[in-house]
Image 1 (cartoon, one colour):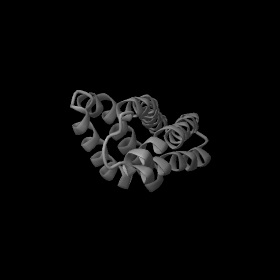
Image 2 (image 1 turned 90 degrees about the vertical axis):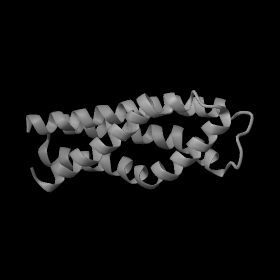
Image 3 (image 1 turned 60 degrees about the horizontal axis):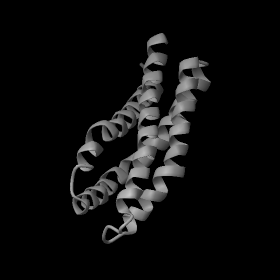
Length: 143
């Protein structure tokens, strides 16, 4: 396995599994907490995920695109497309809500409603990122 292939598997796998894990396992538990605890958790997650995920989410479609250009693989092309759509959903949907949450010092009355909107975008992007990783794996397996 060459460096590019290793990088696209590693990055898309990390991003896809982390974001889908957030949708499927982390946020359902957070939603059961009292509102103040949800606020604290969300702000904490923004600090931790906010350091690495922007880089990974941007690198994943770029790496898949480079692999697609190099190998002319339909799987890599599909992966690059899906990961790009996930990035657009993130920028248009999640980032504005994240920035608003980051600036808050206490949960406003609309906090839960705002975070439920974020959950919708998170479900879409997490699913797309996991699908992108699966497509990368299929590209490597078909290789």
